[in-house]
Length: 231
Image (tube, rainbow, N blue to C red; front, side, top):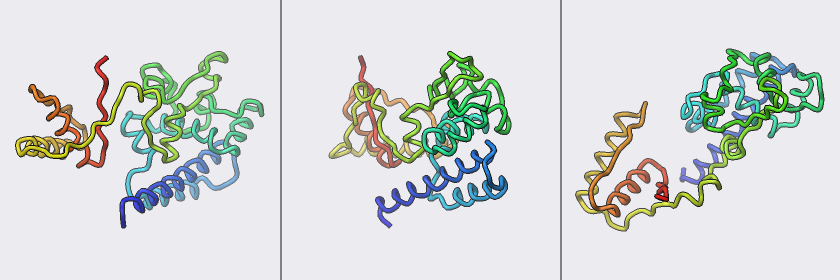
């Protein structure tokens, strides 16, 4: 199997799992179906994933609680699935309010906690969700960030808001033996700390060499290295 086939399989599997998650949420909102069967469909879709699904990567990266995870999925579902948006309108007893709100989430989702939309919690601290507070925090419309929405759907790209600040660091044509050893040491350190990735600082007066080492290490991990502009 080549890399392209693997990526397509992940995209398709990610879409299937996302659809299963949204079907589960529709039932929570009063839609037809069996909750246990819906959860089983989610579990089956996850077991078919060749690697971690997008929503699980976000959950781990930002430290989301189970409730925050479902709230993010609910906001995504409103944008992706008109039937789910309609269920939100029914749950609000107002067809014009076919959107997610904290009050609705608190009423229908498990392990609910009011602090999910506190400014210091991940959903708002990292702007995964925006809140229209004109109707109050509980009843205001929740909107998922467009970049996050695309990521959940399996479309990963550099946020356009960052394009003027970042540039891609190309791989070095040749890496000196000492630099290869440093790169290997970096990868070993990352392998030992998979649970919490350490911050690694490359020091010295060879900025170009350091960039090459970092780019090579990133490539070994299947990543692209981006360099932040200094000013």
